[in-house]
Amino acid sequence: MNMVDVNDYLANVAQIARRCPTVTLRHAYMRAFREWCQNTQWLKVNIPGATVIGDVQYSLGNDPNLDVVGIFAMQATFTPAGGSPQVWGLAPTDSNTWNPNVGPSPQPTQYQYVPEAQFAIWPTPSTVIALNVTAIVTPKEGAANVPQAPLQKYSNDIEAGALAYLLMVPGQPWSNPAAAQIYKREFSAGISNGKAEAQRGYNTGPGRARPRQFVTPRGIGGLWTSY
Image (cartoon, rainbow, N blue to C red; front, top):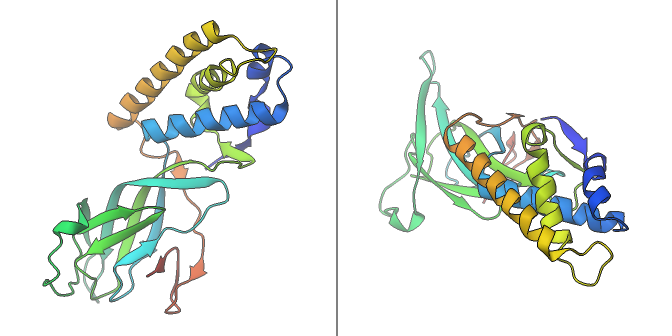
């Protein structure tokens, strides 16, 4: 995923919110960017990993620039010795419906997202299977770099979101509540357009996440720790 410096995208906002400190501009822009991503679920990354026998809950790790806010889809792959790969999708469900009397299985079929950036699968895996998680992400608050992909099409909408916030701040040289309402409507339209595009499947993630290797408590290297 191509990342860019958020400071490079503040100029248009600064021209309207004149005399606004850079730190405030940056906060407003990141606030709008995060809100747009959270509401549209447009920005996604694919995160590969593997299960640990007997473990139900996993962590997707920690990225310095991105927060995981949900899971869009999950796919499992198991290749038996000398056989062909078996591929299936796991369905999102409520873990309260999982039957505790069901024993371990070589083919987990359900998952639940667990805040923050975790998930649980059911039934408990009885063998190691590969999982590919399509995660919904948003820029991390305070990150220096943001994903470029949404800005290629929705930069004006995110700028509108930043201005809708800034111009409503009272008692400042750049305060303009009437203009703020115009930018707020523009931002809302941008969220609706991004959500519609994501729901139509025009974008399933702008890029593949680079694996973040670390060691699980059981000594198996991979993207996830298990609990």
